[in-house]
Image 1 (cartoon, rainbow, N blue to C red):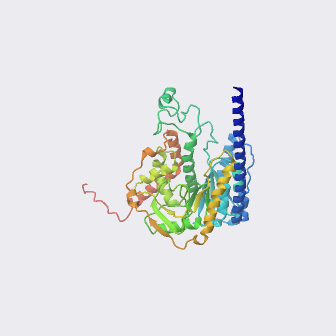
Image 2 (tube, helix red, strand yellow; image 1 turned 45 degrees about the vertical axis):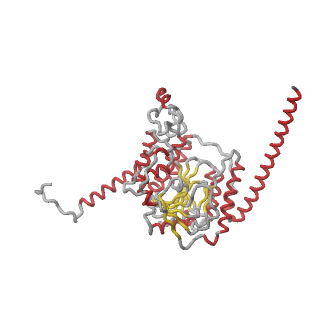
Image 3 (spheres, one colour; image 1 turned 180 degrees about the vertical axis):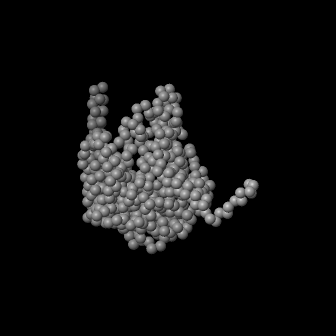
Length: 461
């Protein structure tokens, strides 16, 4: 018996040693490859861009809740634009980048490095919208010197309200509490489960609130940006932009006016990129699809007004995803039309978050590997970017898409709590008042129009 145990110990020890050996080899391989990719990426970037990817995370003490709320309020009230003294006032039609950020991730520094290389960035304004107050993110953003920069902070974040709504409040039903159990313990929200029989998750709810608050803020509240005539480009913080991304946004918007009424410009597509595609001059016109056109989209104030006019559809549909909620708006617009999108055949933005790992080194290796592939593709096709003409491909399904209906079975749910719906609506309260005043103004215009014949008082109707 002892011999058998001893032999098992030997086998286990040998197996452990072999696994350790291969683990060490894997780490060395990743480190070596990471170094190679880092050197190659650096060779393709300017010295100014390199300083962003050299950014190192530091440890900061967390702020007390009351202090955090005051700091957020101060930032939002100031509306401070960094580098305004260098680049001057923004033109009326300049592009505005709106970047959604959370806690610090390595992706962000590579996004900023890519922005530094975008042609026309000096004329733009970059607004970073934060769902989390992170001093590392703040420090990185404040080092940007190639254009105007502004920061806004979502004031109703879970970070600021960890133990009360919109965070998780004592007595709230948890997401996977059964309906019968929820009603028996009478937790908050027990009578309003979502379409899948689940309850509110503050983390999921925040994704929709944050997006909606950001758009309301940049279009309606910030004095520098409301009523702006240019394009607003909305970006997640885990993408890498190509040099002609502004150029293509403006070109596609310009050409979209000549074809079927197009609302949205998209610069990115999901899934693994097809680096063999060389039609950098191509653009595809189709019906907007949240699965295909969500990560990097651009539109103007006119489109926002159309979205905001349907705020009730957005705020009440049982889906915590902002893109699915916007799709619900698209499917139910008052004029019966769907949002149309024009997207570049060769994307001008690529996702860098492909691997989520417990190791920051492995995660950054994955990011660098993605960026290296993108830069190699850009190098191979360098002469074909900034096309003087675009070739637009019309989706043959475009007319049939007008008759598609919203499939509630595909809904994510998570948005049945009346508090979320009311909060979403309240965020848009000022816009709703403005819309009502505009409608009243139009009514009075027609009412007082001299061209309208007066009715004969004696005439019976």
